[in-house]
Length: 71
Length: 405
Image (cartoon, rainbow over all chains, first blue to last red; front, side, top):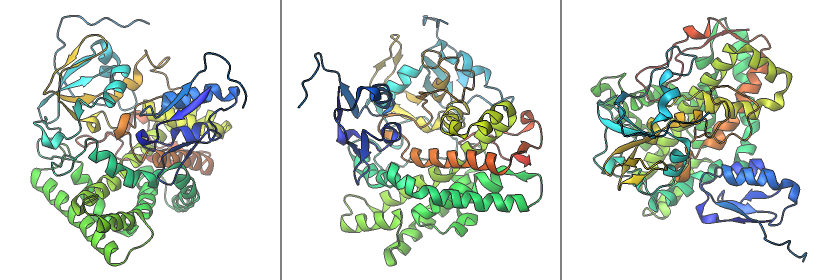
């Protein structure tokens, strides 16, 4: 999976940061920053909850149709 | 459980908000509200509006630009017969302007800023609890703790002298009056609050300090197009009011309900890691604000998920009672302090999502854990059903919560 953020939509609810601090952070303006675009699968459920809990839909998950090759 | 599909029979108009009687039970009206996707209501002013009732519609409409937040610029129904409350036609509360201004203040509530503030919130909480312990019993939880905690915190953030609370609290109560005060008193409070905050801005302009007000003054002075003095005072007014009245009311509602349900309190005392989810569940369940804060004006017909129409020109409230929608929450009428995830709508959703939500959450966590730890025998001094809910104000919290320990 790949995590994306639309920084300009962010309204600084901070919900994602509290839910998954290993993946989400905030810049000086409080807007969402992705720390880990390809987080480990075991964080999947927490990340999905963070995505659902975002009040403005600023974060999303792209689930690859096929497994991605490692870099 | 299945929901009744909507029919052609128009629901009759009901008075809104529904009264909290008895004070600890979920009002009957809330339980059947979602049988209709759109419920016609009569506001306290007597003006008509429609309440969008179902969770998924409410959530979607919070992000729908066909609903304008510029209620003061449209022929919107009034909440109060004698008080415009938050309506200010000089302030643009729709995007893009709203978003640009919101960015200037929202950063002050980021997770990192809140965490750096947490020790201060604990320090204030401890100080208040020590004073409570040394004082007489019963104590009023609202005045000895629920109000002073968020007041001290928002005052620090905004750079407002906390000792001015004697001055601003009365004016804020008047500002939020729906039917509790006469028109001339409301006007006196509104004018007084506006000049008080105007003077604060001038004081920070003369002598900047390390707080949000001074930061906003600096931004405004550098570029008044970005933030005029009027807009700045409007924001400060909203931040001050939302910063303590809502939090204090929720601390009161949450704690009163917890103490009323001592078996739930015992679960938390046995495992304090439950505090964050308990706080969220009490936010979902003890809805203090009805939906008056969601007032919007409908710019175009909007079709809801079941085909119902919210008509152009309608005044719309987005129902926070959707927190009890069984389509979204399992056993919604049960208080389940382990409920997780809990996507309640008590802070709204979309671009107007409560800017102070991270602060409110943190304060509620400190208040709940602090009080239960400090006072292992904390209890209500009278049966919960005898507590009085505020009537005629914007929020429906408890006016007084007598406690012993």
